[in-house]
Length: 74
Image (cartoon, rainbow, N blue to C red):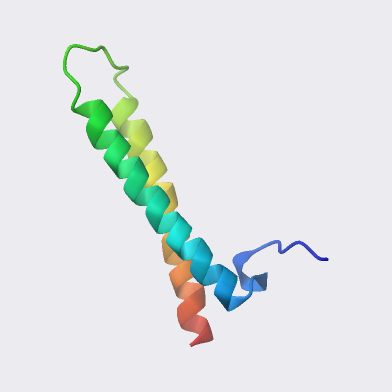
């Protein structure tokens, strides 16, 4: 069985499942960020918020890419 190399090679059903996974991952990461950054009394590295923002941006880009592919398929 050939392993898909890109989202263009995934069947629509799997692409929709991947989209839901990515949306859940985004929400979980966002919740984690709010929790971690909301803690008082603990020292966090100064770049912690930036790291979360980069991760959220990366996940959002993947979500957008999957949505574009699904729209292309109609």
